[in-house]
Structures are given as structure tokens and as C-alpha cells.
Image (cartoon, rainbow, N blue to C red; front, side):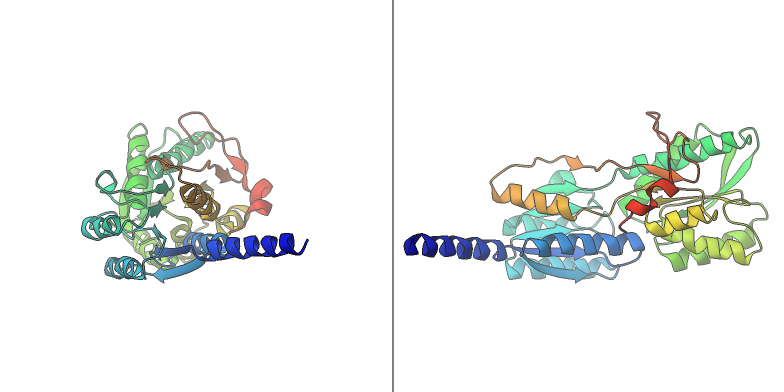
Length: 328
């Protein structure tokens, strides 16, 4: 009996050492939005729950900081590197160094433009082009619901960080859909760097430059929420005088929809922690996860629901019915 007990304790100790011996390093772009904060916190919580060692670096929106962090991770000989690039270009040399180190690379959220040229163990992210399509298609169908499909409506766009694949993809999707709706005229489009403060500033400049703005599309909800403040300051009613559609679907966007100040948000989940942990466990077991970019299922939320937002006919859900489920 004593021998069995000693063996059991030894096995528990061995498992604990094995679990804690895994070191996961994460190069994150910064904390520019509610979405990004939720993304960072969720990944950390999932890794901590496994008892693994977690190394984190906040790049503060600077590519050179991420290059330095990746090289530090290599020198530390961590077991896995998680990477979200602030922009999509300029990673060739440093990601080649990661590959040469033979440390498995897991891409999260934003993808580098040289994915075909590098080795990575797994990749998780949203379909940014599809998200842009959904923003524009929901808007077109909402305009139709209002009986304004024959009216020429002026649209402004708050773009994300220049060079980020989230911004490039969403803009591509928006442009693709708007080509079929010539009555929706884009009169201004400018980066707000995915931040609430810049969204507010750029929207203020739009309002000063244009007498009539009917629609605002924002590449993320933080910029939309900043823009709402400028719209109210200009004496206009957000959500009524100006249709406002964002992307990401954090709880703050749900609150704005329920308050009538925002019309819709397209979901882009930040909750990649469980996906990352599952991938690492499968890699530890020797499984090859392939090179497919894995997308989670995502939806669209507005005040009343029932508006078609995708080319395959999906309809929006009521924000009021889903706000209790939001954890970010």
C-alpha cells in the first residue's frame, strides 16, 4: 500500500513538473481597445489555468518592439510563441529566425502577409474580409428596411490601423458589397487606429468637413463609441441621425445598441484562450494541426434582429437577448 501511495505521489509530481515546464510566450500588439484587453486577458487566463509558465510582452503598437520581443523569446528558449502582429508586413526576417529556432509559432488574430513562406504550428483568427462584407450588407438591408434604398446616402468610414490585416480585410469586404449599392456613397474614409480617442477625433473632423453624413461604418466598436461622442457634441442623435455600424461586439457595443446610440455590431470574438490551449495540448501529443486558418463561428447583433447580414442569408440577433452572455 505504501509503495502504491509513493508511486501515485511521484506520478502527480511528474505531471505537475511536466505541466509547469511548458513556457508560452505571447507578443501582443498592445491594448488599444476593449477587444484587445479581452483577448489578452482570456489567453492569459487559459494558460494560467493549465499551470504553464506565461511570458507576456506588450508592444505598445510598435513593430520594432515586437521584433525585439520575438528575439528575446528565442533567446529564452520558450516552448511556444504566440504572435499577433501590429501590421501584416515586415516580419520576414524575424519570423524566419523563429522558424530556425524550431520553437512552434502560433498565430493569433492578425496574420502576417508572408504566411505562405513561414512555418507555423497553428493559426486562429477572424475572417476580416467576411466581417467587412457583413458590415456593409447589414447596412444595405437596414437602409432597405427604413425605405431609403432609393435615396443617395452619404457614408463615412473609420478605418483601423493602416497596414493591419484586420483593417485591410474589413475595408476590402466593405468595398466589395458597396459596389452593388451605388446609393451608398462613401464621402470620406480615414484611419482611427482602432482607438476610441482617434475615432472621436476623426469623426469630429468628418462632421466639420461634411454637411450631411447619413451612415458611419467603423472597423471596430471602440472607434464607433468614440465617434458617438463627437456626434452628440455636434447636436446630432447617434443611431438616428447617423446610422452607426461597428465590429467586434464587446459588451460596450451592446450597451450602445440598447441605448439606441448604435445600430449594429458584427461579432469578432477575442476569446482565443481555449483554442490556443487546445492547440498546444494537441501539439504536445504529436498532432499536426495543418496550415488552415481556423475561424470561430460569429454573428451580428442589433436592436430588433431579423436583418440579413451575410451572403448566405444569416440574420441578425437581438442584442438584448445576448447581452447576458457577453464576457468581454
